[in-house]
Length: 429
Image 1: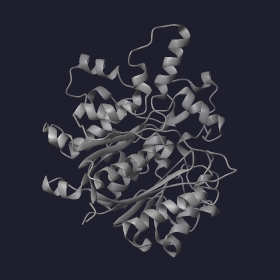
Image 2: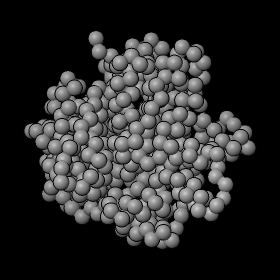
Image 3: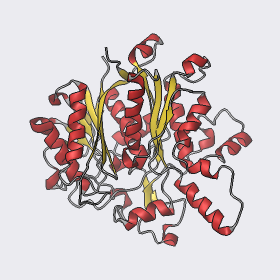
Image 4: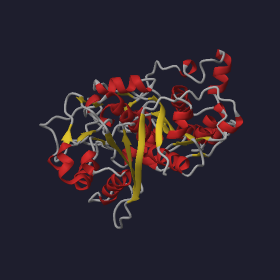
């Protein structure tokens, strides 16, 4: 019999809050974390966007697990080793690990069966920029320089911090990276490579290069006078995404293993499907114009779940607030057919901004909490009056979060390079 994979822990640090529950509570209320960029002056780097969805400037990593039990000098020493994206990863993972009651495990045989798959879209971009500046000045590089920007080191730090010696991996698949980590965590458990995988994604790309390069592609909103309204998926006048930062984690576990140790089960990862657009003659950063790759991912996740399309209650859409939103809605309509008008669809990036490689993991956490609490977040800044006619045909959630039973939900992630994934979550029974 095929193994079932369940979620026994979640964690997040996001523009909405320092943990998963706070982030979700603020999301449900339609709050946002978008404000003027604080870590550098965009004008000095010829950036056209002056705002982003940022971690609260009052957030103190030193007081967050896994740093909270250290003395202040030791915390400072530890944090000096990490890029911002790695710090976020450790904090989100720690919350999920503690929720799953894995903290303090010392049995070597059990630790060999716990792995990590934690991804990022761009890795330590801030550290790359700092190392480049150091090189040009002729100053001595830090011995931690390259360890701060390599994409797999966040996963390595999670494994070494808790002694998890199962498979340790990372993906670097743009905006689908966090979801890809969750999918491969599922595979590792089903193939009996591990009993538990800590999976997720992390990103900290609010930097001169991060903002400047996306500006150069005209991919980001430049509405500097009204940043709180800049992220508006599915609207007729949407004009680009808002950069976000943070990390999210889920603890995936073999069902029988979770039951044996008495773990609390939050939801089930029922299935997933990954596809590539494989298109020719189009920009590598653009999706298939008819959404065929996205459609096949959604259809594949439903088919592999063994459930009918009519059982889908909620789609947590990729919904970046770019022109690609209409293509995603077309893919959802085509995949769900006559059931599409009944399916609640939400764009959570309207509140969090776009966390790039961490976005799929954060969506996964929000989807699990939607199932747990029976509530679907609404899409901020979207009304029946400003809805793009190209985005009709599904049940958009306007103005107020929707309280309803959520038994089966999909979460979409699509990335540059034509990479698509749909994760399917269900309530546990």
